[in-house]
Length: 81
Image 1 (cartoon, helix red, strand yellow):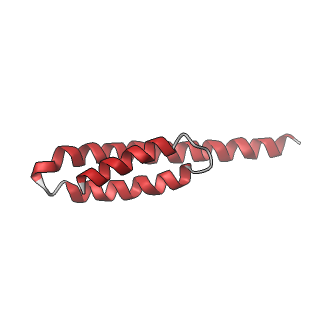
Image 2 (cartoon, helix red, strand yellow):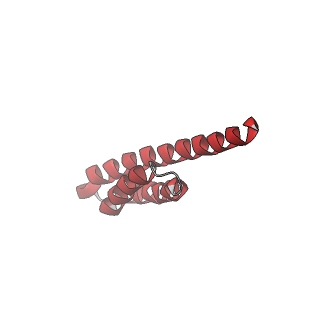
């Protein structure tokens, strides 16, 4: 669970920079957060689970911020005319 959380968190951060698929990255980040919480139960991998949890939170927040920014940009283009 800890490794999966870390991988999903990193993927979520990477996908946040791509315009069309950053909402998908937010969903992956939420799954990474859940796996990070579940991975903290194993004391030997608690550090990796915590790192995955933090990466997933950062990735999810970035994805949703960039998604809102893209929607606002497209909305403002329509308002100009």
